[in-house]
Length: 364
Image (cartoon, rainbow, N blue to C red; front, top):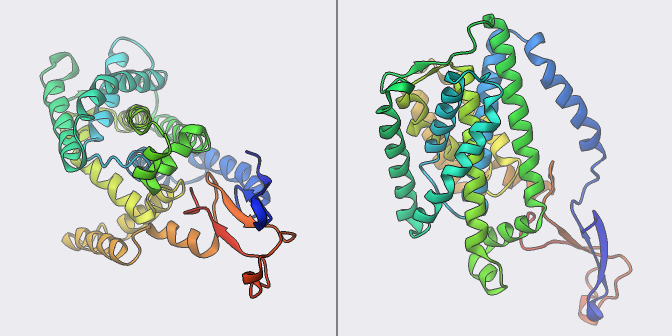
């Protein structure tokens, strides 16, 4: 469907179906500027900021994939760290075989996607909380298996080869660029996915799974596809992570901390939105940088923020902004808008001005 189209619905007149209620002019104008500035950032900003931004991009990748899985497909996983770790160790394996670590990133993505195929056939026999716990079991099982492989360093881990010829500054710069480019591909790739036919199915599942099934949507096939895509994306995050922190250890890359951060960021930013994981990651790093010296209060404040948002703004911060101002940076849904020339029925006499009604929810 085009950015704007008109549809006639019976006697109610003509309605406009639009991607966004606001002009995309400013987004199109600012996007190249933002991309250019973030690309040259490691050569302009101090090394500390470059490292923080690298970690920020890695979290955005993970949270975007978790949001696609839970926010759209309705599958709450607490075991996505399995694919983060598998992506990290796939990168280590290929690097030990003599391949440049940066070149191995797409190979690691492919490996994680292939591993996810048989796993999803096992996990999809379960639903709800059983599915969530099973993903955690898969993650722990993967960590135990990897820890028994001596070639990969066993339980103590191993240093990533292929980076020793680079200076620390070069390693930091190239790691930053790798994380930034992967995050860019993941965010815009997810946006394109949600604008496709599969995206329509996912949006319908997000809004009402029963209605989606009743309308003929193949919910199971859509969820299988999303599970594989999310696994591949988390594998990319793991590959970039192990390059930026070149000592690979099972307890680090398979840590439950990654699942907790994905969940926190997506919930705070806004589940079921493209912008939510980005906004949530910004809030997460802002709190982390300002509170990391506070000891135990650091975790208490994080938990308090999560509880407050869950109780008073369950759709997240970006969800509240979108509902209030109809703002979308990357619109993937449709808005239905009554045309000014539409014929009004007699009982619409009090509607003196044009009304704007979202289709279900703004992202539907």
